[in-house]
Picture 1 (tube, rainbow, N blue to C red):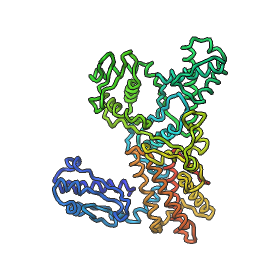
Picture 2: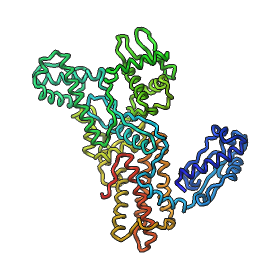
Picture 3: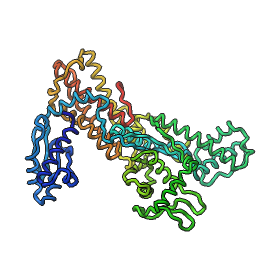
Picture 4: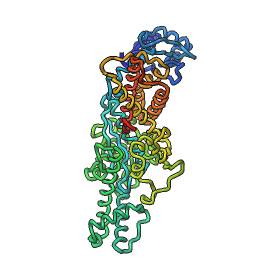
Amino acid sequence: MGGIRALKEQLDEQLREAACSLLGHSQEAAAGLLPLQWSLPSDPSFGDLSTPAAFSLARIVRRNPRDVAEELAGRLRPAAEAVQRLEVAGRGYINLHLRGRWWQERLPEIIGQGEAYGRSDLGQGRKTLVEFVSANPTGPLHVGHGRGAAVGDALSNLLSAAGFEVEREYYINDAGTQMEILGRSVWARYRELIGEEAPFPENGYRGEYIRDLARELAQTKERELAHLPAHEAISCCRDFAASRILERIREDLMRFGVRFDQWFSESSLHQRGAIQMALVELQERGLAYRREGAIWFASSRFGDDKDRVLVRENGDPTYFASDVAYHADKFRRGFSLLIDIWGADHHGYIHRMKAVVQALGHPPDSLQILLIQLVSLLRGGRPVAMSTRAGEFVPLQEVIAEVGADAARFLFLTRRSDSHLEFDLEVAKAQSLENPVYYVQYAHARLCSVLREAEKAGFHLLHQAPEVRLLDREEELSLIKSLVLYPEVIRSSALSFEPHRITVYLQDLASRIHSYYNKFRFLSDDRPLSEARLCLARSILIVLRNALSLLGVSAPERM
């Protein structure tokens, strides 16, 4: 019969037919009036599926919601093998209680689908570009970048599983003032190394990594830079430093399990004339104009609080102009959904970029912007002192080296990306159930151990269908329901762009697993019951592996 999604779709169709009959509208005419939906109540007393559809209809027909709910319920014909009872509750909710055997019979379906379980065609191949991290190549990645990397990579995995065609992109900010400052900073440290007096730029990058780059440059170029004109030497320092920093960023991200399909250079926009092309397009649409010697974008027409400068009076394009050209280029490459993952300090930039998208002729929701809030690094509950190596932040590579990529990724994803996160290094390293990722991975390892013991005991799980109806304990049905609802978790996470929902789901599932493991035996003298419980264990393992894979976290078989 299929899973919960198939059942909900069947019920949706029946509910819509009943609503149309009640309203006297055709199904097509009523479709836009009825926000019909079946939710999954957290309180089992409200059933397994519930809908408030009667409230919407009651407002239209001006009747009591309870009476409308009774009439709708009387017209529903849910599958007898699935639904145990249907009831009207409260002021007009329609609740359905599903049969235990319907839940139980989903287990063989989970095992049959294996790695594909939870995947769907929700996105229908919509071409999607997820741009994340995109740190300036002016210094090492820090823990904040790590959180953005975990969110972007997990979201990309999640959208792919939901049927979107996803590409990952890193935007290299290799043009503009910050690159000039980088060059001057390295040049100053280089001159110090060769014994010259060199005032350090007031706004320069002061981390120890700048000295390291200068030393490496001195070994490579020896003293020849000292004989170049200052502007040429600074350019050389800039190019060398940016190349080395970007190389180390790539290495850090690979150690973190993050790989990009495309590394897009901002400077390429200047070289290809893409910025000028975007300006012309806005001018042709009547959305860019000259004032006081500068070129402005009429972003206030799209809800921004004021218009924005694209080109300064001296003829230099602003960073905003580069962003306009970059997003125009994304659409030009055929992407219809753009997802940008930014630091929380870019909050004020959202309205103007939404305005750009509309000015370029695309719906505002074709650009989704996720903000990454700050990460506070703790050790045993106490704030970690800033790194002396980096100057003002804790490098991501230090965190990965200490706690591992799995723990870092999972903990970065335990909360909404726009919520502040406290990351405790001691918790991340703990081999105990206090550590969320250990808690989930240990559940997986425990069940792998059960299957190894079952194999030694001579259970051949693939040779016959287990009697899943023996799984009638409350704890077993609770576990099965959690597994069956996994595809809905993937669906809702993808639609909301919230990969943290997967970690929440996994921690709840792991809690149920550990509780069940401590209370019941998977293997006993009752062979049919053991086979049924082993079927449950295999189903759980599939869901754990699939969900952890979306997060980019491993599923160890031994711990």
